[in-house]
Image (tube, rainbow, N blue to C red; front, side):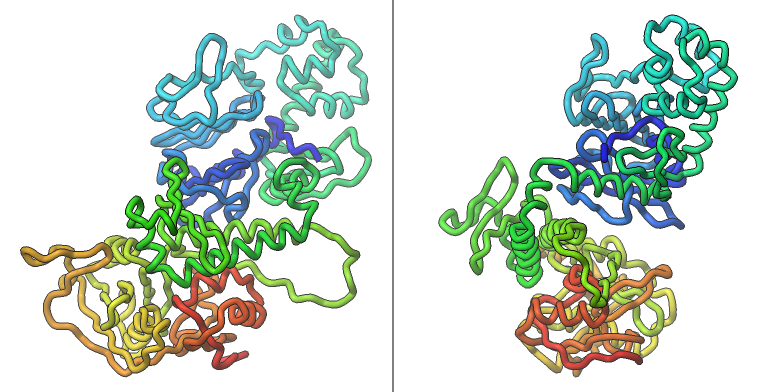
Length: 566
């Protein structure tokens, strides 16, 4: 299928995401095949807008193309208006900065601030004007069929082409010109007849606009429209615009050529690459502290063991037979997430490749579970309070700065190598809830990998937590000064349950104290297993492994018990 959008599908997409007006572009990603923008607004689920291969826009609930995070200067930018320009293929997301996506001439993308270009995918040219960073953006001269100033008579009568080409070019209707011709029974033989039947033509154009507002995509074997085709006799698959455009992207991936498609033709190679990426992510997650230290050392690393690429901003080394490449501008946790994301993308592609006829045997389809608080570990106490923990020095800083409020509590295990843990107090903490938070803080510390049982954790209020050391003292990154009386909870064991908890009415996979998780769960303790343990948990909970890895404490694990009900 040709994955090329016309103005009508772009208009339908713009109408569909207009609900994010008043929200913001939270994050962006750039990969070798395109760009992704995470649109977020309070009260509704966030969504990713993808711009791939310079010719297609599609939507999904997850970042389907991966890439470098916040490569463009538009993160956390407010959205005031989303629109598509006439019958031109230009999408505008306007706000404190403007995002402009053009599908013409091989596709282009611009970020504007006060009308000036602050980012350009590639330098462009519009007439005598060069579009590049530092220059003022010039809008294309687009055709607006809704404008009172647009003169149908002049546009049509001055054309020397046949009616279909005239409608396609002079009115900008592209493939819908042929659709209108079919709808009118091929009755318009000359441009004079088109002018004589302007009433019918206007009705058909209005029908295109109405169809675009309905938010549906009609997918045929080789083409797609916002309405049921007048030229094709076969039945279409009717999907909403989010599902339809994503299906078209997936279909074009399978049929196209290039790096990803060549991978698809070699399933064994894809599978090996998928496993390599996943194992790399696992290694990083199991050595978070060491990997963060390596990233912080930067230029000071041993050149015989580590290779630093200053252009790519990466550190590479070989460990356990794997070549591992870390991005210096990301934390170890973010690097691990990148590897898991790349592995998942290949897994998704493999799931769409059918090498053999499907067998009769029934197979449980593992559920995809979205993630929240992706830079932290978290759970909900049995008394209904949110607990959030850092993963490394950087997130130990950010979790306190971002989440510790006046009513909240700060927990820390009485051991070197422990995360900062915050209890967001919305309900009065009970003894059980406080002990759960302490147990979580102990399990997420270095005590897990060292297998130190019978631990101790203290907690204090926000007023006792400070970033200001005494005169002459040095405070390491991720560390905090605690003043005043500490409240200790002791005799803590290394034991967690992996299961589901709700946050804002959605189920997530968490690792948390056993008493805080109801329903199906797997109880884990420190052990020597990794891949096989995660697979067993994944199969039991019927979720993808990528949902389990980020929740588990650092180190290795063993399954003590599987609980079907609670």
